[in-house]
Image (cartoon, rainbow, N blue to C red; front, side, top):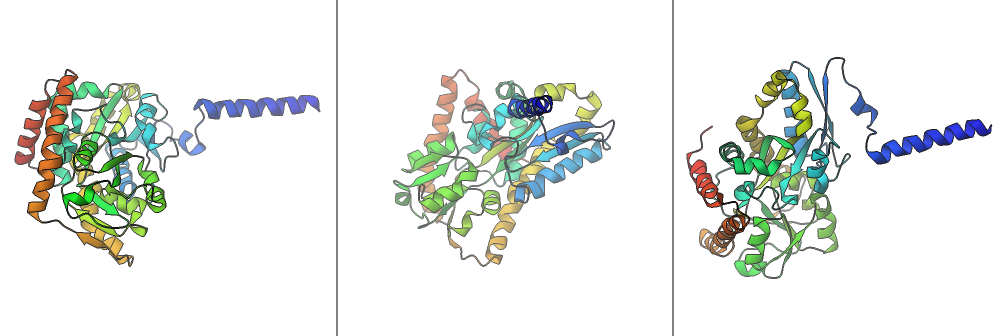
Length: 356
């Protein structure tokens, strides 16, 4: 009897050790067809939310088709593998092979790519922003070096962000003074500080509760997040202005990528890169912007919306935009990234000249 108990305890201890070490994986992640290449994909977004339904799952299907079923990407959503704020290190460390990385959680890590997040940038849509960011990444090795340990497959641009508030909308520059607003790091934080607001850094999954409790007055969010995380249930005020874009990376652990056969790498890149970045950014952002308001209003939500006049937005641009551009260049140059000014100029040129 004692031997049986000892074996049982040993099994429990070993099982617990596997869980703690991270080497244990759910059965669903362990099962693949014979001859296929299993790739575990981690994502912070809810499985029924906009992004996963309209982007991740469709792209995974694209990869399956172009590789003729050889690549088996198994998705794990809603932070079931790792928190969004841990995504970068989780992918680098091999906790997952592939992941959705919200780069706004890691300000300064890929500081040159943050050019696309500069406020009041003349970006006509997110499709353009995603494609341009990929083109910049291809052109400037200094940008590529900032992703050591990660193979970038797609950039995803998202925006422009929308002010979502519980008590009131913002319609003038003075309205921002003293407001505690959830913000991403980097240029968006610099913009809000310049406009008199108090930026608060937190993961998207915590925004709803903190607005509800009054910890923050509101948030700058894209329509995709408004749909997926439902702050419209408690915050009815919306202000539309070209505040800023955000960007995400669909990236793979570099060692895992290098282990793939060259033909498989080529096939995966055929639905990634510039074309994939444009495709993902359009479906993630431009479509959610177009359809989001209709979906929310269809739920019977009373939306109190404000679009400030051009002369008011110009005030915001002068106070929160231009100084943030200058600061971004100076901060990067201070770190020895001397191409920052050239990257900004090239980005503006590419945005103007972008064609599908």
